[in-house]
Image (cartoon, rainbow, N blue to C red):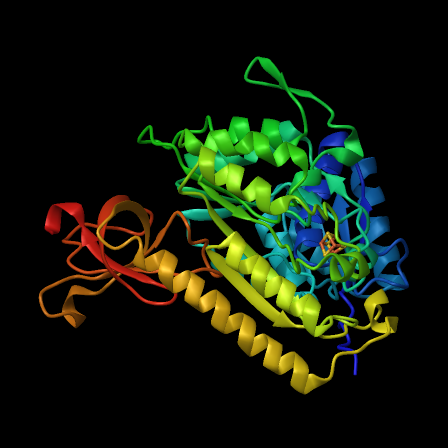
Length: 458
Ligand code: SF4
């Protein structure tokens, strides 16, 4: 049975007034899109209607009130925002049924009001950020979304039909957001999209001025500029690239990692290695020479951590294909691997492919790939014992709960939050806080995590 993806709630938007208001509307809609909402072109199809009002002139106020009245008559579930939001009492007196009234530029409030009125549907199949991740992101790491949608048509995926084709953000807007996040205390930026390597393809890599020079909407320019950011303490923040496909230009960001400007980490969702399966999956950048590329990357930047995910039991996957994948993993020696059993998702082209793999075979292959990748991970982590590595602290223990020694949960550069492993620290001493980046000596390792202590306390 195919997994049914619940429908995303739909938002209608009426935007009145000046261009500034339009920009606000766009900003609100961008955020709602990234939270998984869809847009509705008419009142009838919307779960909730946002009216972004203008209150500059009496005539504009009248127009705004008319628009609110129309939205209530046509749909009934209405949230009012914008300049007239400052006159909440007037609006509520005239339209007691409005769900919420928020003022101009109160992005967070209006987005929260939409969440309350029509909660987003978290969805493991289409969401880039783990459930709750956006809201729960501690201040020391932040997700930086560079585009929405995807131009590929992988046969197991329904994202393009839900989120549409690739729509890239302007490079200067992305960099400004990154700069603001770092100024506000972010120590680690996680660059996300459906296909980071394709960033800017839809806008022909349109250049914009940034800090007195032109930068293109292209992954390599983006990576280079992000590498120039500095925290308030003058340190280079960690910058992690997620959802990178191994297009040739990926080679250009590896030297930035070797120089310490980008975090030596690449999240490349390979999904499989056997050519017939990749072909059936219609994967992008399906390059037979990828193993050579990985070797070259490691020659330039020996510490690069490569994370990936794989699907086992894809329709038509033979035992030989699966064995090919295991052998490939032996060669590739990936640092972090997530494995999934193929599951048909309603609406995906792969469901119609011949050669469905029986559940028990899927399960058996899943166990085998897990065993293989756990062994590789354990050996790679074991090799780090005795080394000094930088870690970022996520959480410091409560001294009252611990016998004199304060512990902390941290991550190395090889560990993205939520999806990879941890570095558990002993004796971090007083005064350490989440977001601190410190050098630690690795004292022990298991299959997924490391254990250690700050250099000064060993
Ligand atoms: S690259 Fe493939 S799997 Fe990823 S979003 Fe696009 S179609 Fe889906």
